[in-house]
Image (tube, rainbow, N blue to C red; front, side, top):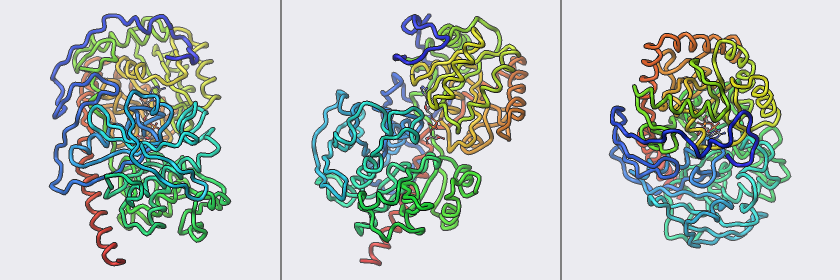
Length: 539
Ligand SMILES: Nc1ncnc2c1ncn2[C@@H]1O[C@H](COP(=O)(O)OP(=O)(O)O[C@H]2O[C@H](CO)[C@@H](O)[C@H](O)[C@H]2O)[C@@H](O)[C@H]1O
């Protein structure tokens, strides 16, 4: 678990897991199944229901990928979605060459070079091929990307806060590189027909494409509208942004320059990661000031939701990170993981339910509500474990909570995927009272591992949890509403048959990336046809 704060965790037990044994069974109807060793070794995916449409060359641009660096859900998506789409398309990734990428054992071949532009430095393009054949282009620019710290900054909590001072240059450079590769200016022997861009860090790419006069179409996926990449207007010249683009129809946002708005305005199509969130962001409550623009996009048929999925590594029957593998009905196996988690977090043996929160500890995730609910959970005989990092104030509150309830509450402040997997496997309920949630992966992982999510009815949580069947949904982000759902969970827990039936239903949920291949393929085809017509019309 590294050298971060441990509260209530017995650090001796990490390599001393009782009864580790992996038993794969085949009683879950998961479609085509690939055993993997878990973690990074994800096996080549198959597609099903793939439409009879041509394969395309796609460059998938991202600021994080779980293979090397993961801050949150975008890292998972960037690792899994392109691999799923590779069943039908020639899809490659573009990623900054962070320290972790350079330090990895993968060979990097230098294959392209890009000149300086405005204040964006010159850089090189490297190519690496993963064990499963996925090709990743890495943007080699040591002064921008090879640093001690996260992809967005040194601070906790990921995308937004405590960002590097030169993030405008860093991610404009990434965006411009994507546009230059698309236009065939990087000297590569491969040229994409389409760009698939993710979040504000690639938001300028479709704008650069347009300013270069390129007709290469682009999909811009919003994973979280709350992180927008806002900079002072005076930075436009440094980033090579033409003066006339800084206006309300362009990338101006209340007097600032917005990378997120650039992506929305200039991309051929905008997607979000669930249907409900696609609708929610067209309203003032969830639109972060961009709801008017997004509503227009929706009316033009240029905004839609394609839900995230989960990959084959998230399978309790084969996951080598677990203390003991298990399948639906094998509650002994699940209990072995619960024992491990209790032991690891210093909790007392208990016949009561084990609640968990695995999350970036930021306002979005409603951790304040969980902290408020904790005393009632403990009083009712429940136990609670937290794993996450984020806002310092929240981390301190979690530490205090663990100190106040020794043996009943444990908190680990930090990021550890192995432990997170054991917690999904060992817990009975996952708490996810997010104020908004574009899709959410944790609730899908939890369901697959037989931990019932208790979640706010919003965004992707509303789309992926069946209330009273695979988890519990509550309507308002208030303690009263949340507590009602928690009480329901307690009563289900105590009526064993119903509890096990819900667990089984949750574990057989079908949220696989294979289901995303058809909608993305149809979308890619549509915007390519439109771009072809536009290119012919405008010459
Ligand atoms: N301390 C810790 N240790 C180990 N693992 C940890 C961890 N804290 C979190 N994680 C892991 O990080 C991931 C979180 O993914 P989510 O999609 O649930 O939320 P996130 O807000 O990061 O993603 C954003 O992008 C994704 C992708 O589109 C959307 O699903 C989501 O709604 C949106 O907010 C999960 O894999 C979880 O297990």
